[in-house]
Image 1 (spheres, rainbow, N blue to C red):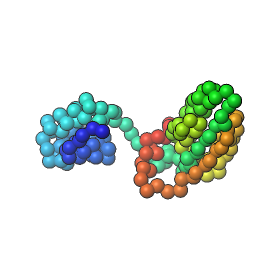
Image 2: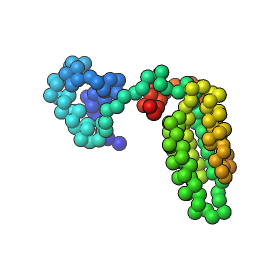
Image 3: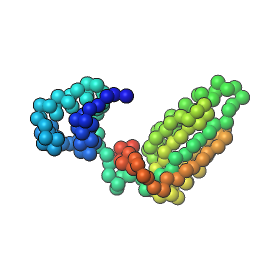
Length: 160
């Protein structure tokens, strides 16, 4: 993990809060010269600490119902097909706009974060899109009712 000093962390906190701020505004907040802030931001970019600047979409565009879905594939008779089938499931889910995250879990599992307008639509999506995939051993849906950390990530993940 990259080593950051207090000034680097302060700059990153400010940019995470509002990446639209100018270097002079950041310098003013941190009571440092603009040249220092400019140099530090440039170095953070060169070290790939800052990869890019983006936006986080507001609550109006974020899903109101969320669930983590665990999908476990049945091991086929020819075990070499399992890898291809897991990749197929991941690719298929990745193409759907209300699937926010797709990740592999173990040899035969896929985890997806699904978002929808309401719980009914979310359940219908799972039933009509995921549960109908062939040769699944298990589909487990864990509805997310409340966040204690990470809620802001939704605005970053939502497709438009």
